[in-house]
Image (cartoon, rainbow, N blue to C red):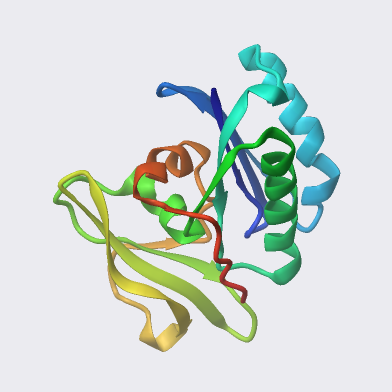
Amino acid sequence: MWTLTLDTATPYLSLGLFREGEGLGRVVRLGRRHEEALFGLLDELLGEVGARREEIGTLVLGEGPGSYTGLRIALAAGLGIALAQGARVYGVSSLLAACWPFLEEGGPPLTPLFTARNRLYYGATYAKREGRPQELMPPQKLQEALLPQEGLLLDPPPDPRGLYELRPFAREGVDPLYL
């Protein structure tokens, strides 16, 4: 069975298909047009890996933080696919998925930031310890003056493989965090 990863919390559409550590991911900057490209890109990925929608057994969805509409696209599409396929659904912080490829075991913590309105940011701080993500600061709104001085990642897209690799640490179901 394949794992579908999907995140639309940011201006990027992050989508991937993985099985037993192998697979493909795509990240496309679409602004607010996720719904226009989502299923076409999914069909392309299915073709590239030689899979059918019926073979999707697990979904890992980005939970934000993000706009109501942005999150709703991934959640509605993902939950619809899961319902149709009888697949399990897991949720992962979009901030964690965005910084996961950059976290080094025992390395310095990183704070991914998503730009919000009114000169605010949504951010969280994470480290990687014993192969697991460690949340040092939970997702929250931050003013520019209160940002950490080191380890910042500004508006990184959630990583499709990161979502896949974080599934073992995710909870079943989704709990979106709206901006």
